Length: 187
Image (cartoon, rainbow, N blue to C red; front, side, top):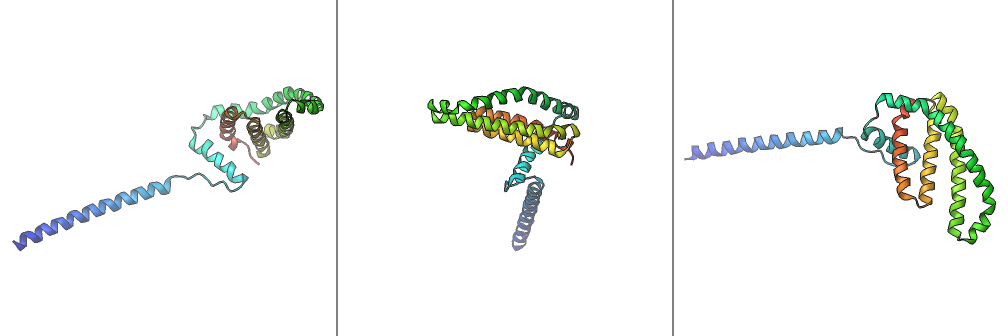
């Protein structure tokens, strides 16, 4: 009978050892999967924010086909020129109308402030576009950065104007396309 118990105990030990080995294998497999998963970079500064966006808009989002990226990079300088041509007269008109800000403030301080912020944001965005055009034609990193900064200014301006939904949608779409072609712009 003791022989029977020792066989039973031996088979239980083998079973326990087998379960322990399987558990260790699963743990190792689970750990190695975690090690291979990429984590989003921490946002510690502005470059960290840019890398955070790059992580989600390039590494996690579906990639555009190379042909579409080529078209975007080829026509983006011309789109910037056209936008500049249409935006410049509008901004000059707004700057001329800014002389009316004291009268707009009579209608309410928030409307005057929103008007003033809109003018400043539009001028800043226009300056960034002007600075980006030569870099877009030469496909330099600075051209890409100035368009990136212009998109950030537009986002902040839309949020400040309480156009939250359009700010978020415009930001996501604009940044997706911008980050998809980022590698085409070299130093």
